[in-house]
Picture 1 (cartoon, rainbow, N blue to C red):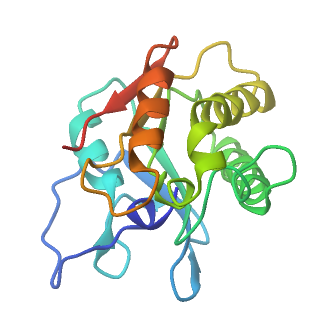
Picture 2: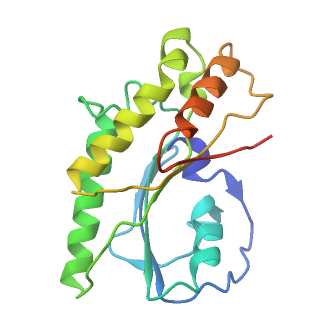
Length: 193
C-alpha cells in the first residue's frame, strides 16, 4: 500500500515487541529512499517505523507453525495506475518481490501457503472522481490478479476504509466503493472511523 502501509508510525527507542521468533519478515518500502531487507529477518520495526505488520504478527503468533509477512509499500501511490495489474509499476514490483521472497522461503526449506493479504491504500484514489468511482472494481481486479498469479483459490483480503474525515474531494465516493467491495466474498473492510 501507500504511506500508511509504509509505516508513518515512528517510535523512538522501539520497545521489545515480544513477537515469537517464528514470525519472519521480508520488506521493500519507499519513503524518501528505498529500504529492502536482503533476506528474511525476525519481525520488527524498520528504523523505528512500522505499520500493521507488527500488530498482525502479535495477533497471529499463536497460530500453528511459523508465519511470514511480506511487505511491499510506497508513499503517495494510487490503485488505478501504480498498483494496476495491467502494467502498474508497483504492481509489477509487488509481484517480482513477492515471488523472490517466496523462492527464498523454499530455499530455506519452508513450504509456503499464502493465507491472506492486508491492504492499506486509498487516499491517492480519492483525489479524482474517476478513480474514486471505480475503486471497487479496481480493488477486486487487483485481488483477482494476485490470486491468479499465485494460483490461489481463495485470498482473504483485509483493507481499511478511508476515514470519514479524510481531506480529499471524493472521500464519500471511495468510502461507498469500499463498502460495496466488502460485500464480495473474502473481502474484509476495517472501519477506521
